[in-house]
Picture 1 (cartoon, rainbow, N blue to C red):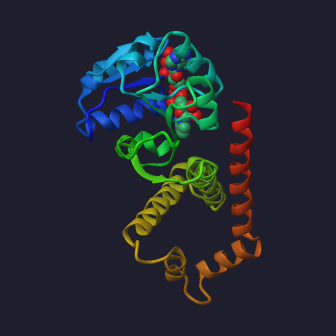
Picture 2 (cartoon, rainbow, N blue to C red; picture 1 turned 120 degrees about the horizontal axis):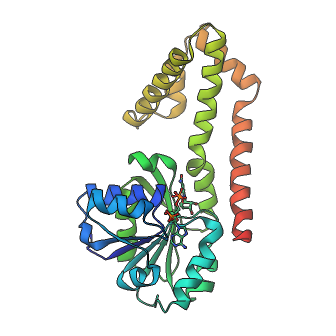
Picture 3 (cartoon, protein in one colour; picture 1 turned 90 degrees about the vertical axis):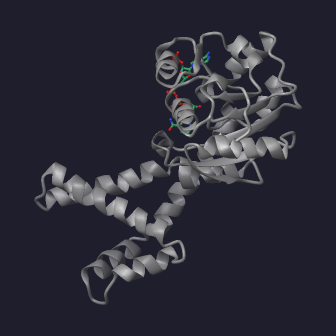
Length: 274
Ligand SMILES: NC(=O)c1ccc[n+]([C@@H]2O[C@H](COP(=O)([O-])OP(=O)(O)OC[C@H]3O[C@@H](n4cnc5c(N)ncnc54)[C@H](OP(=O)(O)O)[C@@H]3O)[C@@H](O)[C@H]2O)c1
């Protein structure tokens, strides 16, 4: 990975996990700074990982080659405006946003229209270095900077680049919001298992281990499509066949499609708000 000075503006859950992944993956801690109004998160990161903690966004951003913006979407415009007003020059810097719902155009309207901006959309398993991140680069971003961003977000999981910015909303639908879909499915299964007489703990274990095992089977059998994996569990006239027939009768695929569309539509709406 190229050695660049990276400043994280905002160092909560998501930025903190990226910093963790970077340092544990061997990135030099002295090239990483985390800046936030309080030292609550940043000092902990500094103590554990030997990065620099700061409460001065302007100074930290001016020092860096790469600025990772990790504040909440609703405060992003104000935080960026304060950097510009504080004299930070973005001309030769790469800006990487991890915020949902803030468009490249919006960033460039505040930071300068020729600013190199990469929008990323990670998901919560990034906290365990098992994340899935989609990335989109504005046309000002060089191939070298794209490689850098690939490695940065690769520190917390898998990555995929999208060609069109609107596809970031597809990433939100298929990955960003997806952990909640799987949790809802698992919750529903746990509830039914409890109705079938299992304790809460046993019901959770039954569901949790089945989910982990199934996900691992998907990962380890990349040569098999998902339909084949499903059919391999089903014997004619058996129990799984009955469950899957019931799901299909109730049109689970259509329900999933509608939910994903709703997530994507909301992502597009949010881009108008922030
Ligand atoms: N968590 C996720 O699963 C997830 C997934 C995808 C994308 N994201 C995106 O990641 C971003 C951060 O989410 P999060 O869950 O990590 O939030 P979080 O844990 O609440 O962290 C927010 C951070 O922003 C800092 N902050 C607030 N005002 C600031 C300012 N003026 N200047 C610098 N830093 C400031 C906070 O500092 P203090 O500690 O001092 O309050 C805190 O460190 C959001 O834009 C979100 O859309 C999150």
